[in-house]
Length: 178
Image 1 (cartoon, one colour):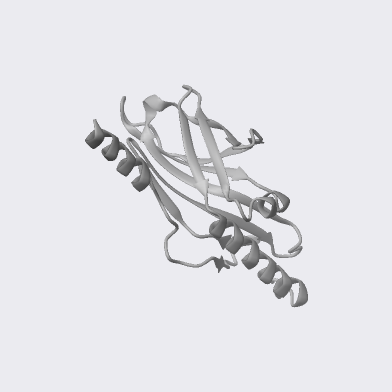
Image 2 (tube, one colour):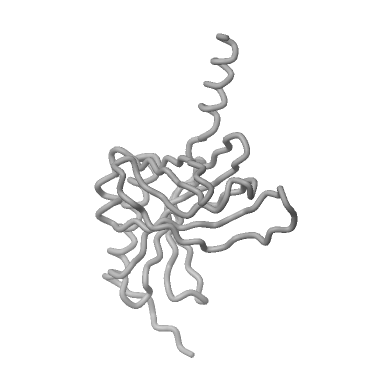
């Protein structure tokens, strides 16, 4: 019994690895009307679900004060679990889920890969800077899945956004000519 309990604890502890030792970065592409701020990546694997997630921010090139913060999640899981359609945090606050991309279903019983976004405004991020964010996702089949955004992930994203926004407001980028 003790060995089984120990094995379960090891699986749970290994399910959520800390963020990769990387830093938040700004991605600038002239093909996008916004700058992308890509946060630290975390990944996990619990039983049949593999996932990666990171905070993202899209900053409007022309009006840097207008930006969108969201949690980007890429999940691969058996289709029998259903599609993840709802999310809430550990304070029971509903969080909007947007499906960005889903892989086509090729067979019964296959795995599916989905890219999801959960919008979070800046006030929400600031309020969770010291505690992190615990999210429960629910599929249309009633399956629950949990993701944790660490305080370090939130703090580094906020600090980077504030630094970059200050730069963009002081010296806006040159206008693109058509």
